[in-house]
Image 1: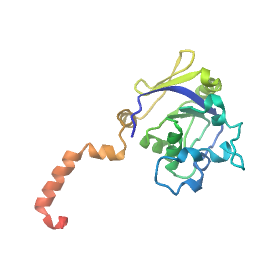
Image 2: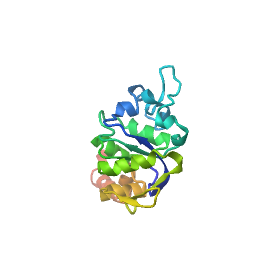
Image 3: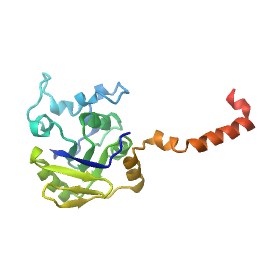
Image 4: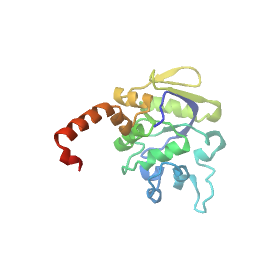
Length: 203
């Protein structure tokens, strides 16, 4: 998993509430276990017309936000079914942070496991960031995980809270597998002792 330290870039405004995981990545893309290639399905029903052409009114299709790395959204973002493909699709598109007043719990935790920083802020602060994001490529945000701040285009900062353990994992690029491998020496020592005491377990 890629480390998350500081992120500077264009933020896309998506002021919709209750954007569920099926809206983020429709069910037909759930057949794969690969984490790449899912950007084409991101927000598919909103991003594309019925004939497969791009919907010019959808924010991520507009030139100013095509290369956004931050998404500023409405309440309860990522609600619905527990599909890990939702953060995979966002990451494959290039989104590394999502800012919203609230999130679906499973989606929120899945973000941390995939190198995406979800940030919860009061609605009035999200509204300010939506205004910033609405200015497009002329106004960038900087998300600093170490200092737990968001730097706005005019220079003022918004502070955010985060669980210390989740922060540690993101800063160091640690997913569940990497966390386990940090204890490889202890695991090897245990297995060595068990192999000596109970060799029949190892065939």
